[in-house]
Image (cartoon, rainbow, N blue to C red; front, side, top):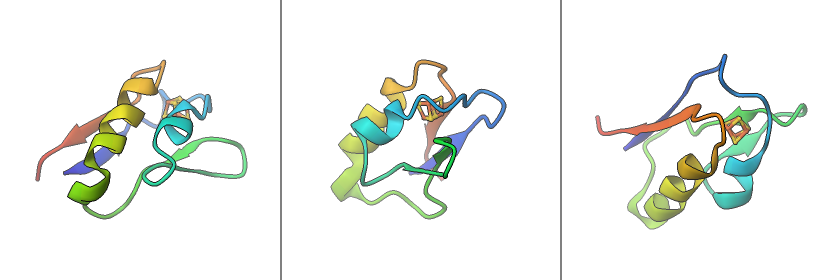
Length: 64
Ligand code: SF4
């Protein structure tokens, strides 16, 4: 499972990071930096919570 972000949709709420701190990092301005690598099963539920927490619906999870 990979995380994708719609860069134009991210406005820096940081809610993804609050809900899933082990998955979604933030840059210095508070914008989301999704993981570049496959999301491990260990943090899968956290990743789902982080995606759901985004008010802009800027994040999606895809199976590859
Ligand atoms: S919650 Fe959504 S809008 Fe806010 S930083 Fe995360 S991805 Fe961007």
